[in-house]
Amino acid sequence: MESIKAPRGTRDILGDESWKWAYVLKVCRDVADCFGYREVHLPVFEHTELFCRGIGDTTDVVEKEMYTFEDRGGRSITLRPELTASMVRSYLEHDLRNQSQPAKLWSAGPMFRYERPQKGRYRQFWQVDVEALGAADPLVDVEVIGFSLELYRRLGLANLEVVVNSVGCPACRPVYRQALRGYLEPRLPHLCESCRSRYDRNPLRILDCKNPECKAQTEDAPEIEGSLCPECREHFAALLAGLDRLGAAVQRDKRLVRGLDYYTKTAYEILSGDLGAQNAVCGGGRYDNLAEAIGGPHVPGVGFASGIERIVLTMESQGRSFGEAPRLDAFVVAAEDEARGEASRLAHQLRAAGAAVDMDYAARSFKGQMKAAGQSGARYACILGGKELARGVVACKDLGTGEQEDLSREDLKSRFGRS
Image 1: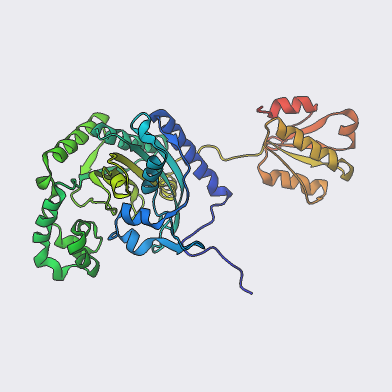
Image 2: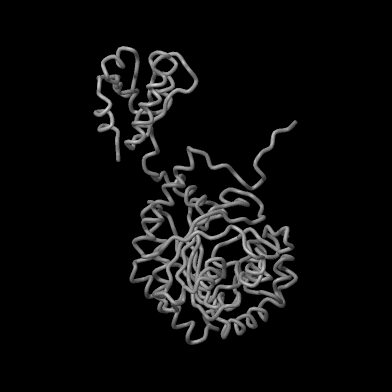
């Protein structure tokens, strides 16, 4: 019988890699604390309607990529493909409007999209999601982008580029859509099938197509900036000025429209020169009408999401440090079988004092246990035999230098303990 393996597009994050993820999340938590964002934990599945109404029926995510099923109660349920819609749903459900605004929230966890697996892109993937809800001030946009930049600075990332655009608002975007359709109409025969289908429903998405022929056809497309209403133009100018004050190197990109319909005004991405085709480390922007789309009142919001897999890939490609890998303080060795029970007790005592400790559970010989101690990466081997038990001491051997000394259990706790 063939063994069962992980489904295509998923992967197991094992010890040698999971500590890198833990490091990234720790740094993110530290940055969130500095910016005043509070961590929340949300369901990994939601009612399908949340994403259809929030993200947009005509988006690739809703049309092609969602994992949707009917539960035993006949309800349509979807594994979350992103977190922003869930964040806004939670904000509304728990009346966070009645608290100090903006509500600054962040979360991290798995997302699910049925995509073609490739480097840096999986069907189950982890994201850090940061949202500021309840404020329309462009300085909040600056803060959110500043959060992402500070996160990457602390992680030591380099060779990054910030690209921004304004996608307008419901008042001015129709004007640009019409201008874009007028430009694209004679070029429709040269566009790919997906872009031709987007022409009537969502022509802005044509600008985001990666097909070389489509990119060539849209090279001279009109820019949205000429169609922006005064409010959107003023907001975009304030955003650029704020980013300039931060010292952020910013590139304006007329093709940047993002793949979700809820974006208004600000859209941005941070790109890495070390990731190849899937080069976006993070993406985000403003979504002032999302709350209304899912049945709530008007709530302006802005945020970003950053894939942990891509952060780790970028750090690895740039040779960045993930901090010190977890390491055992001690490996307890029973020199004789009669000492195994006492060795177990010693291990528990040291762990209770805060030390990282392991021991042999395979009844190996003394030589085998010492070999296992060396392979474990522990700093010390704590050896217990008849002589040590009789004298009330533990032989503590430095596995790096080979030096050995006898210590009492209290001295051992003082040396290794953290509590």
